[in-house]
Length: 442
Image: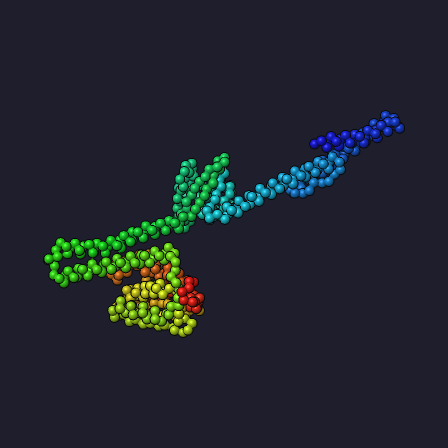
């Protein structure tokens, strides 16, 4: 700092004439006293500024430096500039770190940082949820003391992190995590966790779906093949009536396969988000009377079937796809016919409820146990597999109904009691009873 030497030279330049004047007027003693006094003054001045500087170091970061004269003004100015520069750098680093933490907290995956000894250094909210940890209380604690799954402990201690670990957390409600460990720094690790419970569930559903489709198709194919093989091997040995009987059974099974394939195609189109058909104002009364007539044909006089329709102007029409609505309503009606013993009663109802509309099918059939109701809309789920096949069901009807109603912002409700019957209802919002120009989409 050249100005330090400049300041010292200036002090000497001021002090030297004073000392010389004192020596000329009063002799060497006065000159010496004056010189010592001047030096003591300068020393005190410098010590005071040193103390002010020391006091400033204890102030909060960002506190301005004190002001002074001469050399110390330059010193304080330089220190002030360095302090502001350091403060700016610190602020930028703090802001960057805050942004990093915010980004890490917003990540859909869990992030967990471990220091030496696998102690928890930092974790985001998602990691806390995945492992059941507390971001403040558990810092500094070895993670293996808190997450005691044997697979996890063995994986972390192995040191081989080339492949991720699929961890099933039995104590976390069946949660399944995909864990990736990334070593970095000095004995530090980053654990990234991803919740794949839903993916595993979907994979299980896919496997079950393929197995069910194979099983459902194999049964009628086996029947058809068996009948045809029997006829080919011994056609001349059977009477015409027997041949026609076998062919009718084979036709029934082929129609069953055709129905199954059509239902699969319908469900696939609904589940893959195919564009919704053009919506129109569907007249409810003619639609329900047509569905009731089909249900009577299926019943063949075995049931007492009634239709109750509220034809008030506010709920006479329903906005949607007539084809899809017919499919959903007909599925509910045909299910009631299939699962209601002969002599039972079935009612098809359309009414206004809470400003919206409700289509309901009520029966006094065999009913459904409460444990089965949440799974009824799963593909191929059947309460009684044998009875479902006897009645010609594919196991896809309610899954199709659920998706169709979802496309129409409607809700499927199921109420049932074994031995007393069931009530399946589709609740439509008030907006579906409004007016919409034909040929437009919702």
